[in-house]
Image 1 (cartoon, rainbow, N blue to C red):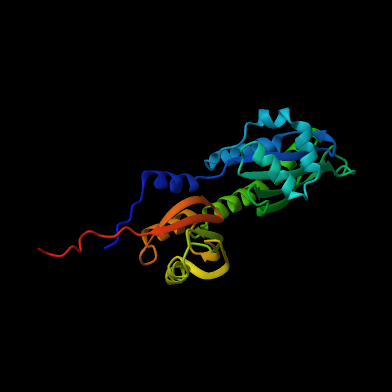
Image 2 (cartoon, one colour; image 1 turned 90 degrees about the vertical axis):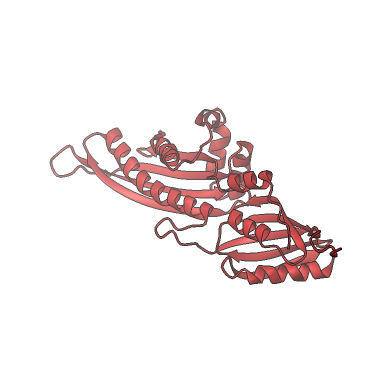
Length: 282
């Protein structure tokens, strides 16, 4: 019988990895095409808070406004945004562009005018600069006052876009579908150290393939200097997948967790301790 030692430190690590990410919000927001505003940004922070998601203090962001604006101007460069997110201790960058403009003509003989807003968001993982969620929405409202009309249009389009991108962020981070609660297939890069003998490599590969309720597919990417890298399509979030491996290790091996992120897991295998229960009877 194998002994499986599951320390408090490992449990804390697993629980922490299941938490929602810390997010930095950066929005290039213009009312009437030229007037800088922060209504959509404030809405984003409030909606993230409602989901229990911590955000970087916007005072810190405002104090680095010039650098933030430079990052926003290069919005196509995810790596620059990710670098800024790391600097602020964030795990996800929520980057947005929002603009509202009025139609040139008034409606009929009235002072009413229509105002259109377009809002686009993308959520970028800081650790690998990959988009995990995107959303783009438009809205049109009617108002008598330019500033008010533009503001209403921004808020309407912003709320729709933020609902989609935040739901996508939560879904991808947790690895579950909000609508159905069913597990999604999650690509995980699994690095396993301590494989100093070929039988250990074979045992780990076979064990991964046996985990039918947790694993959709397993591909060995590399093996060198005692470390193997597998591409795993998991049916569980990363922290739960790692827990399964710890609780059900390969024969004669013990699995130790080194580090867990939503798309990467680092493990180490060691020889399982021998039971003392097999001593000869006197």
